[in-house]
Image (cartoon, rainbow, N blue to C red):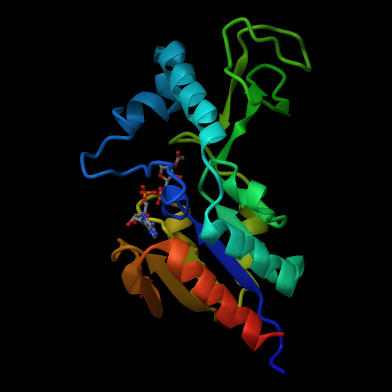
Length: 237
Ligand code: OAD
């Protein structure tokens, strides 16, 4: 029996598309009607906190109407079959669909819609309602200090040390549904390759980073990912 591989998986908005969560870069270049720099930068939050809070409040509320799809469920199944030490899931997504599908060894490198952070005491807490100007921080009780726990452009992604360690130890690196336009995530394939990993890209179409991958599977994640997971589980019973 072949030794179990260490698999590192990076997901992007495409993995949640079939659940009904819109991707970031639609054909009009807008993110649900907004320019990304108007809603996803620290500058935007300073300039117009109400607009930014409303935008993320709507995204958070919309999570109540979506469910994990076959791709999220298959990735959780893969972790269950091979064990947490062999499957590391890194997501750029701020939705909670991988969590709800059951993935445990999961890092939300761009933050989470269901968390809020106090800009004064810096504590992070679970938050599943709207953030209002009157919402008190559950830690320091100040009001008006909570912001979405989201990594905006110009801010440092989360878990970078753990991610680099996982990439350097990977036998297989898989990217699912990401356009490869945002760094550092877009550079992970290179790090994994440098560590000797085989690389596979799953996407509806070729992406900016397609040339970096050894293998390509073109099509919807909800169809391709369960098939691939089945193959891996059968090869490592
Ligand atoms: P994008 O919206 O840039 O790209 C989504 C990718 O998913 C595209 O390459 C699509 O072709 C692909 N795709 C769409 N539907 C798919 C499906 N059903 N199956 C497979 N692939 C599909 O999203 P990301 O690459 O995730 O950052 O964007 C990266 C970051 O940019 C986001 O995390 C966010 C954004 O600005 C922050 O907010 C910091």
